[in-house]
Amino acid sequence: MPELPSMRPSRRNVLRGGLAASAGLALPALAGTAPALALSGRPGADWGVQVGDVTSSSGLVWARSDRPARMVVETSATDSFRRVERWRGPLLGPGTDFTGTTPLHGLPAGEQVHYRVLLADPDDPRRVGEPVTGTFRTAPARRRAGVSFVWSGDLAGQGWGINQELGGYLLFEEMRRLDPDFFLFSGDTVYADGPLTDSVPLPDGRVWRNVTTPEKAKVAETLAEYRGNFRYNLQDANLRRFNAQVPAIVQWDDHEVTNNWYPGEILTDARYTEKSVDVLAARARRAFAEYFPIPTLSPTRDGRVHRVVRYGPLLDVFVLDMRTHRDANSPGREQENEQGILGAEQLRWLKTELSRSRAVWKVIAADMPIGLVVPDGATDIEAIANADPGAPLGRELQIAELLRFVKHRRITGTVWLTADVHHTSAQHYQPSRAAFGDFEPFWEFVTGPINAGAFPASALDGTFGPERVFVKAPERGNVSPAEGYQFYGEVAIDGDSGELTVRLRELGGAVLYTKVLEPGLVGQ
Image (cartoon, rainbow, N blue to C red):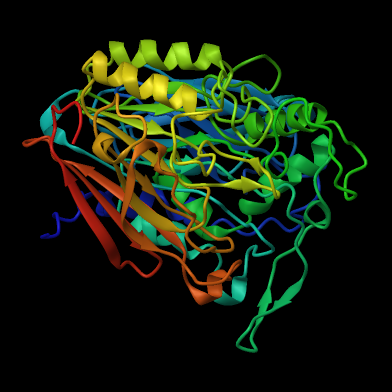
């Protein structure tokens, strides 16, 4: 398959000046500590900037201060900022760990937006810190502009954190150079249940050396410890440069809280003094909302992770939450299961939004795969597939209902993207191979990890007839990033033909697998 043209190379020229400040941000000196409340000088934003859930007219800008400050955002059509529009943001203080977001509305469609975050002393607005700059491109209003994005998940897991001797989180720099429109962060954005040690011996005799902080020395239980896990990743310069150039659509999975969690669970893990997962999840959810710009989620109010991000006429992204509303992990053999992995309300929402969508492509961003068996201990199931190739049972019932709905409503252009299993693969689901056949064929693409342990390929469950047409995975478990097997995916939608091309890539840039999908089809 011939390579598509490089994605918008002209954008890099406009980034040279605008990102200089962000790219050169120094590593915060006291990474594991809260900001001091009585520092001399002006407020600083050494943790960089982020933008979330960009549409054709809006985006949400994030920053973190090193002390109480008023957040102000200025936007411009050029990186010279000769003409600016000013957006007054919130006061940043200890209630949100000195983080905050500022919504931007009424932006021009399909245009490059340059922005800078200014942090002002709340008692003296003339005392303003050094601006931190970033840029993003709004979604196009016209189909012919095309869309490109990357996706992956699983960051700093299994004991593999920031290794500065190897260059840190290299995959973010590689994705940044592709210049995508946005990044779909498919969960396990932190490993709050994964403490880090200073060093880890590798099988070949080398030693992996982690950047460490006090909050990463144990499993997270307190709000401060969860916050520290999200701050940890922002110490990496590659990630900060990436955030300043590529907006994100973020979802969560289990490791933002603890491994394989579900609502109502009581932990038996001896590492935890707080045994209630509901208590831990509430703290983690607040930290997650503080550290990512998600319009539907607030640190201090109720909200939700699942949402639709409408990215112009070519693409709607349906972000699922397969944690908050799931039933308890079990062997997955129930003959009736209304709650399933999404919960009844989220399933109704998803059906409604899919039927309303007029986008050519409808990407279903799932934080867990459909037909790959993901166990939880010796008997229980963590994901959807229950390792029984027969008729749908347990959580499979809910997926069967959704797939049947897509078929009978003749909803076109659905593609499933996910991460979670720490290898990369492409699965084609075909009713002629399935125990349950009332659906149209579809594709599921898996990628990750970004910087975490890699694991062997998961077993397939035949209920929905998956065929694994490509896989790359190690033969043993928890292979370190120093040994490879770090993956991401790239999606490009051509504005003229409407074709959607998926490429599965690995660190180093190699394209491992390519699939081109045709627009306007219910199944393919």
